[in-house]
Image (tube, rainbow, N blue to C red; front, side, top):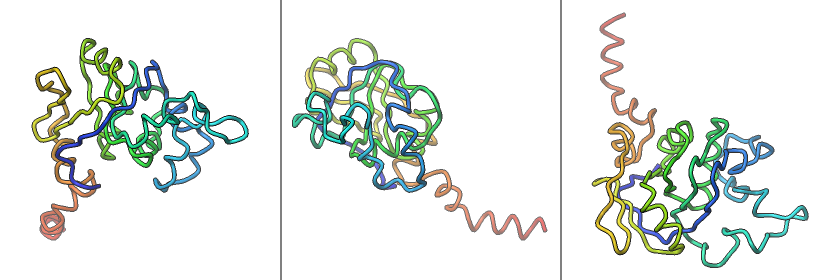
Length: 191
């Protein structure tokens, strides 16, 4: 993971509620433990017709969504199974931030562990974001603030450990490996 301090991007809006992980990345694409390439299957059943052609009416297939790193989604995003492939697919596609009023707990935790920033906002801010697709926003991990036009900075929450890992570009294993010398010393002392 790369260290994350601030993400600035245009938004794409997927205003659907109860989007589960099988809709984010269908089960037939879970045959890999490699993250690269999963983005092409993100929302596959919604993005592509049976013949593999792109559905022009799906939000991610429209020119306005191209290059957006922030995805505004409906309530209860990421519900369903605990597949880590869901945040992997979003990241591989190019999203770095998911914003909603409610993000499923397991998906939220998997996102933080993999460098996808889940931001929970209130109904008023969420409605504004839904109504303004393509707006430029910034997410500051250091100050834990979302910055959008026409509003004061909006605080959001990320637990201290996850925030530390994001700011330092490490995952849980990377955190443990930072303490490798102390672990070796402890093991030598307790043998």
